[in-house]
View 1 (cartoon, helix red, strand yellow):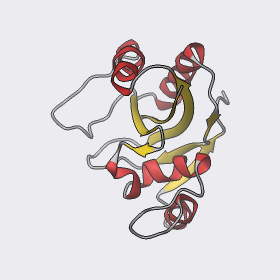
View 2 (tube, one colour; view 1 turned 180 degrees about the vertical axis):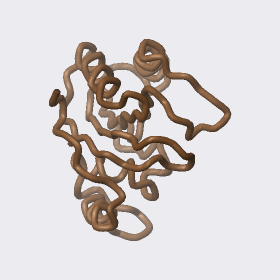
View 3 (cartoon, one colour; view 1 turned 135 degrees about the horizontal axis):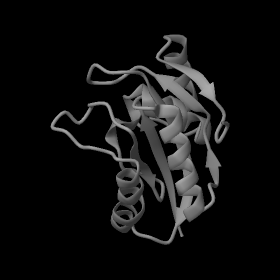
View 4 (cartoon, helix red, strand yellow; view 1 turned 120 degrees about the horizontal axis):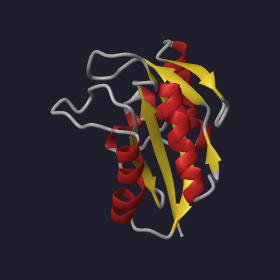
Length: 156
């Protein structure tokens, strides 16, 4: 089984779309763990605030197959549209951040909307450049007001 950490975000009807995505994911496989849901400002483009959550799952599927069969299916069901501006508002965005312990998204160490939720799951994971843990990086971002607690995982 592959160990995977996903980031799920939305800034179009985010409460509804995050909950729908979580329920769809959970119907495929139970979560090993999920972070709290965090509210963050839009990144890289003007738009409404995002809700973001990180989840840990196990899957027998390869990364490519998981993206194609699980992530694409959920994003299509929730009417995700892709635009030339990759930071445009969206109903749902599901990204693989870590697959079998390997960082897949290089933005992990720079982007507050990834760091803060992922720190709930992997607080001791260290940035190879700064040597700081995700927990330390997240605390600095929380102190700057870049993210605020919104809800616990799967709360209505």
